[in-house]
Image 1: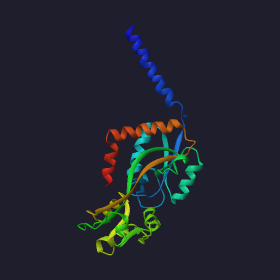
Image 2: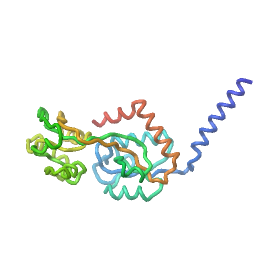
Image 3: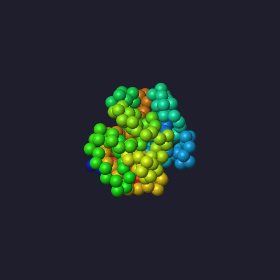
Image 4: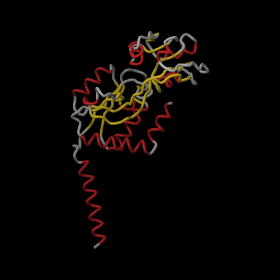
Length: 251
């Protein structure tokens, strides 16, 4: 009798698990969108359009594993510009967008899964150049390179500063090493990744002046079951070390 009761309990739990997953139609699929934002998401060939296996990066690898563990189908496309992807995700059910910075202003606009990764705004100096920069105001006395129209550059300008803006952030790596600028205002770990691509390591972080978290943002009509399963998968991945391992692979 006891064995029959145990078997009935086991079958009951299996039924509940299957019922929970049955809330999604068999043909359900999420449309995932992303952009070039190395090392988090980027086209393998550096172009502004790619699909599925043509996309890699920290966030891309983490998101793929999330969907695998959650047993949810998806398609993945990298496009340009960001503004278009953002509006598509706002307007279309079952669309998701990453890597999306979580802000209080955006919170009610989407359903969120994350954080996938964290970023910080930093001032970097050349190797061996340990400048004393306790705050942004103190940095004003130095020549600062930044990326034109990037959020970091715009923030500096809003503080009354005048960074030397480059059309490509990689240009700031070369300027820093050549002594053409004293500090590079960029996002960490994006800056470290770009520097590594240029063959430069050992940059000194002299100031961290803002932090943000990157999430997977979904259209508000996305089923809660999708959000819950993906968040559970991500939490498990962080617990078993998968997230840290993937992050270190790119840095």
